[in-house]
Length: 396
Image 1 (cartoon, rainbow, N blue to C red):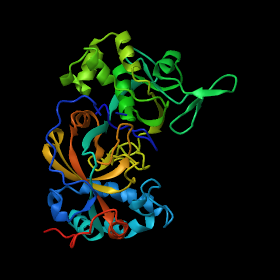
Image 2 (cartoon, rainbow, N blue to C red):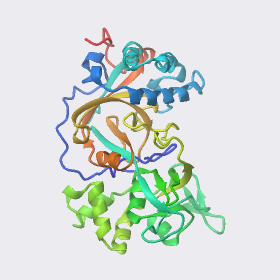
Image 3 (spheres, one colour):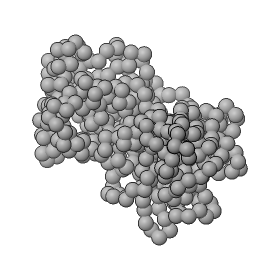
Image 4 (tube, helix red, strand yellow):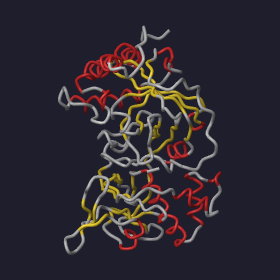
């Protein structure tokens, strides 16, 4: 999870799931390299996969598509995903679908599954969540760590933001240690370990003694490279590899001195700034990189270098936190600083403690299919990007 997602619009989102975990479960059988179309009968568990949450997530994505020009590409870096107009027929049908059975039939009729294969055989699925932490509007023990807002000297510059100096000149924005040492504007104050995990996740909900709640939304990062605090803790003997989980890190922080905690956090120069947002619909998650609220077990973060946001995907993975051999439909609605590669996903588990427990132990290999409109899949075949399309897309 500590290498997971930091939601951002568009991000680094949600920063890294745990780079140090016990050995991964054995991988599901993987076919030879190369994108390959499939029939729905080939998708493990398709006929029984829960569709309610992912279909609701996809409907929100479809709403985004309808606001774009007909010929607007879904992604400039992923041209094979087609244009907004290509997705209109399938979106219209799913928006009108009265129930789960109808939605399943629409996918089978309107969309073609294409399996994505990493040429180097790399595949990993992790989890992230929206934490909920107790906070204060001014510092009081133990809520002493500021949740920093964007400072006035911050100059947006893509992934390489600048700091404007007093003389008007600029330089690369400084690392975490410099930012925390000098202070700055804050939207709230929380326990130091909670702020650490809030930065890992990239967003969260903060609750106050008067019962009010706000969302700490991702605003920007400082452009410095991400370095794993977890690896540093293991390498320096502060925790064991078996304790490299959200729970294990929290336990170490709670017993360590303030100076030790600060030293550990400063090993990662990447720093995330937040903005104060209204809670909105408490049943939905924070807004992801696709500018839609995330849906628990319906949304996933992907690498935008390989995938267009908004595309539905089918995933099979061996994950203990999902009950072992799990498969399900998810929608690419977010990105993440550590989410790199074509068969790499970070599943959004929801809000709160239980979601965090499940997300914190999610780290497993798996397989991934993108579900593309028939016209888009046909163009991929015509361009030689995939093998021959299947004779039938119907189950059985």
